[in-house]
Length: 277
Ligand SMILES: [Zn+2]
Image (cartoon, rainbow, N blue to C red; front, side, top):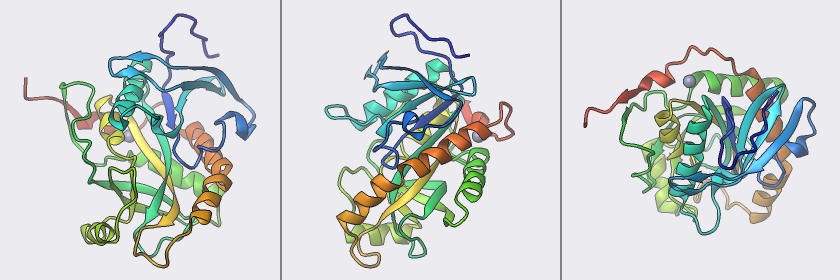
């Protein structure tokens, strides 16, 4: 049974967390999924050294606490770098060990179609948000940056629950946003080896490693990057945004349930004490 915290700013203990992105933004996650064994316990924000956190929903899943946040914690008037630090500071205090995320991305590889699913195995960070960390304590090794064990769970869950949907591994290229990329930028990313482009995998993946947690995500192709095939339509983007929310939400819940208490991945060992102190 999950304990409800009454004291101000006392962060509940949880081993599991989910960061929502654009694919689940249109629903109230997890309540709108109406799944058995899932109960929302609390919704609150916390004071952090990086400002007030976004609202954190605490829910109970078969007796275990899970923390979740909408749309990467991005909100008006808060820098995206600060939003990420607030979230991961809360996760660190809560003792989170496993983080699943979802988001929408643009297709760069011509093999990818709208509504295909991507489980990234690597990334190229072209964002300018470099100095985003919680402390100076660690050297972070970005070998296998997306947890192979969590990624495997996401792939298996997709194959089981969405057998007709194409699921691919991919290199996720991160840009700063908030705008999308130009045709020339997309051609550059293609040459660099990026398969999809989006704005949310970094700095989250660094912060997850910094707190010693495993991190993996599922991303929905919501448009084609500029110059890749015919121009995409805003209507299509909007339809995908609203129509896929429950599907992605259910994949997330089913995957969270499959995460084992003892894992064999080496994610937590890829964080070393800094040599610069
Ligand atoms: Zn791992």
